[in-house]
Image (cartoon, rainbow, N blue to C red; front, side, top):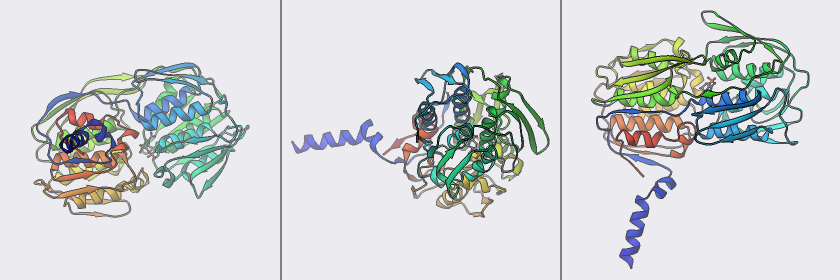
Length: 462
Ligand code: S3P
């Protein structure tokens, strides 16, 4: 009887159910050489933007390959609370737009943006016209993040915001006579720029944005929808003029693969031995490919083939190989915005490169789901890589012979999905005995991450 109970327990601990229950993963082996092809889920920025813009259209919009992650599901839930009809499955999402100023909702509703800064900030743009008070909340990580950066420009439209010193929860009280604004976006934040762009949709007159360069998915979607948008590109800024108040037609969209999620696999391949990987249909929008440019400069070969355009976005198949002789980099800060979500991975490449790498003007990295510049430095310390971090820069002393032999625990990182995944890539690339907590965090942006690294040969246990 005791033996039977024992074997039930052993089987339970080996089971998928236990794997799901366990909070951490263990990685004790580097990955063996692989030569494979994978596909990556839909782009998060585009998935959220598609849903928010579809909610403003007159008629039914459809998307395929919409990212089925928590951030996108929070977006759909918020829209449903605002009275928008949404049906979503793994294969297709349909949104019947409410039209401009068409949200219908109960008094005192609460919208929950979960972990998503993009949702929390962008949806506020759509709410500057709200008819009654709406409360916006988020999870522990999002509640630590700065929302003044969006309430400040959105106030100029005429809306009122009651904030907790610029943090969530925020009460939004819209205006029924919004005024077009002029706004200088100086952080290089696509979230701030897009929040103002969305607010301008339903505001008569011309909104003018002088924006430091950042990802331009919202601009491309507006253009594709033939909305009256004019963009003048200068060296460091884009001047964007939008005339509001025009009806929006529905938008069918096949979301291309997310370059930020793809980057975990680019770096895993680059850092592992004798491996090759093909990733199909990746969004290579020039405002997102900082990682490709930076890694090329560091000696990683990434080849783009079958380049095509889709509704304004650029898409390609990516081919990556293991890279020997990685070089250090003095990273041009002009590439920061285009690589902003990939720096933890880039720091891992710098850890294995010959020489000292330097990354500057990166204070925005500490404004993410967790203070990622500090966490980058912490992870490097844990793997024995000398680094000097300041409030906006990091110097990394690379070691081409880097091999880890000790135990490493990664914990208490505000469940930041990118810290979890970058740590897993470090474990698979450099060795050591890793215990990485909060595996549930991948659900926010890349639910199939563990499945995909396992497919390439990663051995993962609880
Ligand atoms: C995003 C913009 C970036 C990025 C985030 C997604 C977007 O944030 O870090 O993951 O979809 O607009 P900032 O605009 O705050 O730099």
